[in-house]
Amino acid sequence: MPTLALSRRSFPVLLRAGGHAPLHWNHGELYNALLSTSMMRIGERGLAWCQTCELPHDWLLELSGREHVACNTTRDALCTAHDTQHNVTMRLFASTHVTIPMDLSTLEPTGTHAAFDKLWGVLAEGCTRDGAGRQLVAGVRNYDVTLCDLIHNKLDFVFYPQQNSFTWRRRNEPVFDSLLWTVLVSVTVIILFSRVCTNLTEIVRDHKRVFSWPVTIVAGSSTVLSYFAMQHNDFSTEERVLSLVLHVYVWVCIFLLLMPKCVRNGPHDSLNTTGALIAVLLLLTAHLQNTYETPFLSILVIIFGARSFLKFLNFALVHTQHKCLFVCYKLVILLCDTFVFLAVLELAVRSGARKKTEYAITAAGLILLSILGGVFLHSVVRVRRHGRQTKNKQAPNAVVPLDFGNAHVP
Image (cartoon, helix red, strand yellow):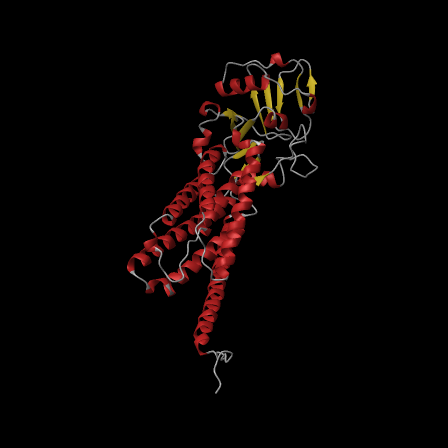
């Protein structure tokens, strides 16, 4: 989904990563986002909103006991929650002056709203370290939620512009956010992508791709671990459905690869794991970026689409000439690839598009490039195969030099 990365050192206000001016909610990109979306998520991972997809409601059930806190829009902050009975005010992500009480004991539950009281208690635990960059004021009962609460207190907020309310949660530090896990996933992505490049090279050379147990084990284990890791990602509904489709597709591919060899007896047939590897790469990169809208999405979709269209051409022109069991096996793989390719286009591209027109243009462009890539691969393979067959036919007619070294000359 559309995201905006935040600077992690711009205490106390929110800044775009690499930016210099505080984010303002009353004009510019964020104002347009608030007008066109039903909810906006704000957390340590950045700002996220969705105009062409939906945010999952089951994630919201984890927030503050399913209750909303009334929060009215204001000029110099995202919104302001106010309890008139106890004269308590809470501002979310002010863009100008930021203050907190000097005496945090004043942050006591008001007893009027469970969700508000729980958040008030969490804030009372304090974010008063020197690096917080906020002014401590005596004798006030106001609290400004800032970047310090996102990073140090591990808080996430969901703001509803149309309802003037928000929900919140405190995110636990899972093992899948550790540096060791990030390094491990990054190394796995590099290894699997190098294998994809190797498979593409073998396809162009019309060489058979041999089965590799290490690659299969890495792909299978990465799929299992990514399933548990993605439970901590804040995906949209479309992204969650796509994750399930990709997980099932990987295991279907692994099962078909491990089937008896009797169904893989075509003259030019080989074991191909390109589709499964690309699916694993999509899962891992989406986990690292917390969204499928990554720099790798377009190139992975094009490669997957080109490989799928190449399979279609091979099935229609080559594989239908073999026995029925082999044709059925190839048809199953072709249908799986086509379904997954359409799912990636519909779900991943739509969840990353900021407008409906942008989604349509992106999807059409990826389909066109995938078809052209598949035709190119098929043409190159056919030329190389035709050249090899011509060479083999000419070999028996070649002139063989006679060796008279041992011949008896009368």
